[in-house]
Figure 1 (cartoon, rainbow, N blue to C red):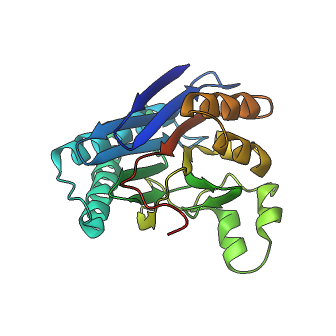
Figure 2 (figure 1 turned 60 degrees about the vertical axis):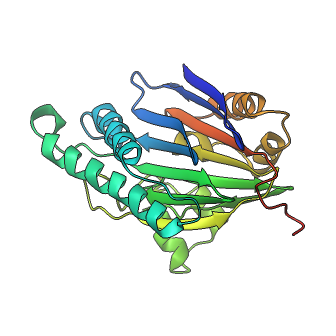
Length: 255
């Protein structure tokens, strides 16, 4: 299992990543403290394609290099979103360039987050996810690029039916495939917990367990709780980054 834990001035984080029941872990991640905040990302190599681990590892490397070379300006969320989108785009182009031989057809999801200045800026391609846990509520902040999410958006099935749909693992956009990158920004409150994860985690953990993780004393306990719960039933690789928001610079929920 790969893991990491760190404490930024305003953000505490812990990570976990395991192969689970699979022979190869095709997930990859990064968590990189920066002067103005924290950058996190999770990539999930597309199942059924060759070299999913190559695609996810390449995506994370190119993405992290891109954001480290860029400039994040506190309060400038549009510029931050463009930097994250650039990281996704360059990673997509690198995957296409290397998708030859045994790597032909490889692809990956990528969800990225920049924490800073009382806001999290997100960029998403595929069905890896960022979820907010706040005072007993659980809210996905990213929308999956998936076949079943399209059915939900069209009103053909409910969100509850989507969770158990037999085609829930089919994604509609990816790096290395039909590429798009959706960016959003969300205000943060002191005490928020955010979980950035591959579907091997969030497809196998209940809302109640997410709430319990949000009530944990620290990110290590929260990450361990979620990983242990997912590992009981998940048939996929499992990767998560748990971020807890601290510090008086963050807006409090009652304001």
